Image (cartoon, rainbow, N blue to C red; front, top):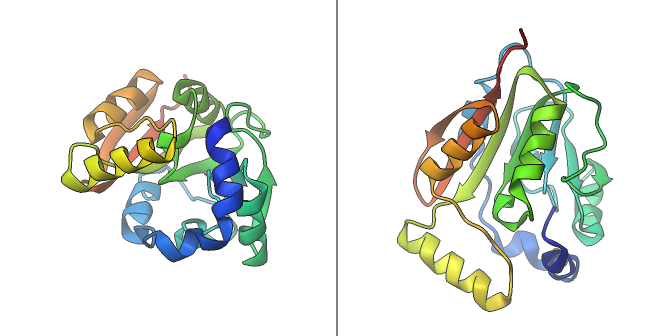
Length: 193
């Protein structure tokens, strides 16, 4: 799931993507998913692209969701279930998912508030939204932010505290589960009353 301008780049870049991207932080993803109340069965990896990070999820049957057909072709070749679409309008029923992940892609998403509202809608109470992102406050993060601007991406990076507050404002109980250049934040959907 990338911005409208970014998706064309990812379609073309798909064959090389896994060669240049670092592996996903499996332990941090597991720590985020562990914050959920109850078992995790239905997980959707939004912006899952080639499935690189989806394969690192400690769950049995995750679904890759992305706008880029090229990237989803790579994920499908890895044997992953895929759905092409826009995260601003998720094709899942209300409260039907246990967890949603976004790994290294949230900064590419246009209208992050709408995406987050959709995630909150599809998460069951006690379900979690786990985001791994790059901290623009680190030296490497500033370099990445500059590189993406030079490529022409419309990226919108957030520091860990900013993203935590953003998720809290969207109605989730949020916390940072791992800091650093690539950090992980989890937001848990509050129980319905």
